[in-house]
Structure formats: C-alpha cells, structure tokens
Image (tube, rainbow, N blue to C red; front, top):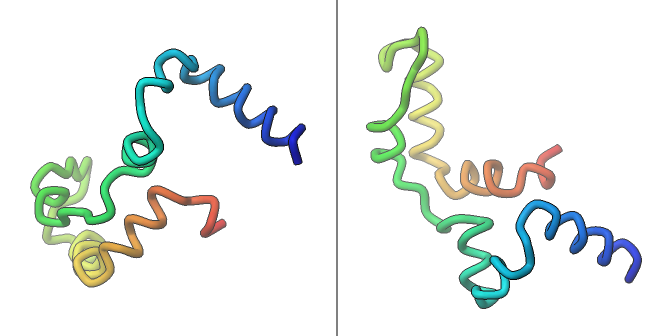
Length: 85
C-alpha cells in the first residue's frame, strides 16, 4: 500500500508541485479538488454554451429537468467520475 500511495503522491506532485499544495490545509485542498457540494443549476444553465443545440431542444430540456432534480448526484458524477465507471 505504501508503494501505491507514494506513486500517487509522486504523480500528483508532477501535476501540482508540493510547494504550491502545502499552503492549503486539508479542507481547503478538498474544496479546490472537489468543488463545493451544491451546484447552482440556474447559474450553470445561465452560463451554458449549447454549441449547435438550443435550450428548447428535448435533450437539453430533459438534461436540465434531471439536473435540477438531482443536483447532488450530478455533482458526484462530475467530481468523482471514477465511482460511476
């Protein structure tokens, strides 16, 4: 287990150097990595670029309907995609 953890930490520090991470405590780092627990679906909707779709398209309307019903589930999928593979 130590070998795997060391490999994870080494890889993590390849992406983000330790001296940049060490300024954060564990709660701040979790917030930076995972984001906030609640998703403001209306804000998300307001800032969405549909690229070839419109807000009135069935697939888009259904997405927003599902998102507003289960924003916590959507948050989990986007912040922890490995759990849903």
